[in-house]
Amino acid sequence: MISKDKTYRTRDGREVRIYATDGCIGAPVQGAIKIGHEWHLGHWTKDGIYGLYGSSQAHDYALIEVKPRIKRTVWLNVFDGATSASDTSIWHGVSKRLACVKVEIDCEEGEGL
Image (cartoon, rainbow, N blue to C red; front, side, top):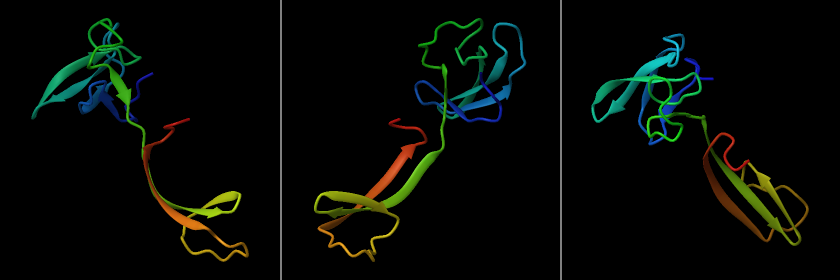
């Protein structure tokens, strides 16, 4: 169900603004799609299918929720027979590390699950 409290884009990646979710029967979600430098009127079903009365789920203008991005640096400590992750490259453990690998994470929330 589409909500005004969430952020969406079209299936083909265009920016979307949602103005209402209680519009006309068949296409209650009303908003705009940014095409080039202009905003164009758009109508969707409550499930984000584009067009009056839901033309097609696979339409380029169907709505896709934009999830928050996770950006962080993680350090992988590599030992003989084991690996651990840390928020810092500094190691205070007893075991001798073989390597410490910096990993930059930049993904959408839930990606890869």
